[in-house]
Image 1: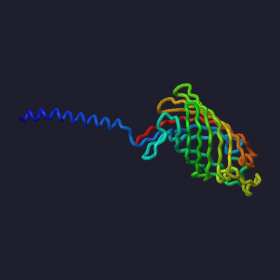
Image 2 (image 1 turned 90 degrees about the vertical axis):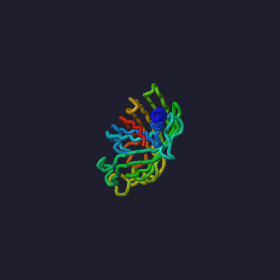
Image 3 (image 1 turned 180 degrees about the vertical axis):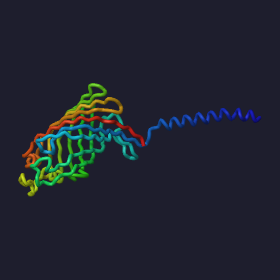
Length: 257
């Protein structure tokens, strides 16, 4: 009788263990509740020494992008990358001092600016439109933003080519920081810049995804300062036409937490 009871228990135990294993496998396969997809990278860029300058410098560039985020009530960026999307926007601007150009003597220095804000976009298969607005957490302590669009061509699964117009704008604090001239200036007449559209231009970019983890980007653009920015004596001593180029290596992350 004891042997019979043991024999009946073995199949029951096997069924229980099998069920436990299946449940464990399903738990492992279930998607994590929290996830973030990041792109972090760096490289080099060529751009004016400061906005409105005619002299160019090679500077380090940083890429910080949150491509998708799932955290409690927040969920954006998941799907086929088409349609409406919303996410954070980051920006970095170099410091500006009188050492950059003697023309700036007597004008207050501007610390390096770290900008944080929000970006909205809508993408079709061959085009996208977007807008973003950022606040200078350090440096200018103002708001700056951009609207634009791109035509998109994907000759293969790894390559993306885009080109389109740009229009930037800024508030009084930003414009005053970079384009106003105080009466203490030694080489330029006093000038007060106010909010409005800042520049128009065009940008082109080429991206190649080497793998699921790595990508490379090269971009170039031209913008022309307009409005109060173009009328600034700082720009008059430099150039309203601003060119730039950037080369970046990007690492992609897909993190569950």
